[in-house]
Length: 210
Image (cartoon, rainbow, N blue to C red; front, side, top):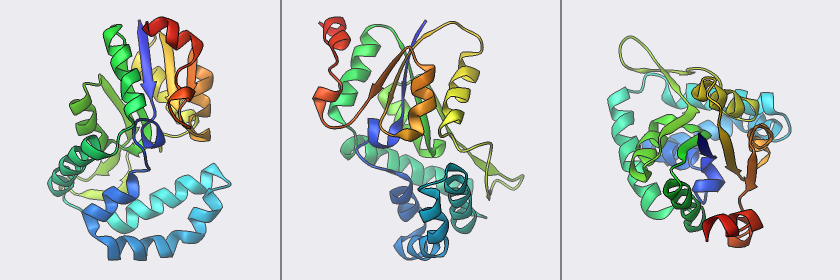
């Protein structure tokens, strides 16, 4: 089995997508106010992963507690359509298509929210999405908490291994930041994305895709 695991923000997509999604969902004013309240945590989180995760949880609590799941789903579908149309890296999509032609499994492994990544993955023909999940209450509304861990750093490798469920696999991993470090270490072929097409066209890729 061969698997191509792609980070999303900055790798498949040209940007970080969480803030644009939240802006679409709750509006610019509410998002700005929430970010102002948790700015110290965000700044500290730039240096410390634990605080970065805590800042993300604080933002979800402030903005999403009590949100109706159906409303969020509709927003996620609209957002996914916009992302696919306007915010994907053409050079990374070329790699997606190469892997598809080889019959490799395609997986998104991302700290971004699974709610909008699933419709993106469906549009792009991916096999699975391993991403940050939002917790729902019995009433169908968001609790403001994450359902499980933020899918970043070591959690990316853990989630991929859980999805593989013991199946042996040759793993390509595509990413753009230190948040992908453990996924790179887990992979047989790590590929850092960024800096244009030359960064993707490594010698083994040129020979494999010819």
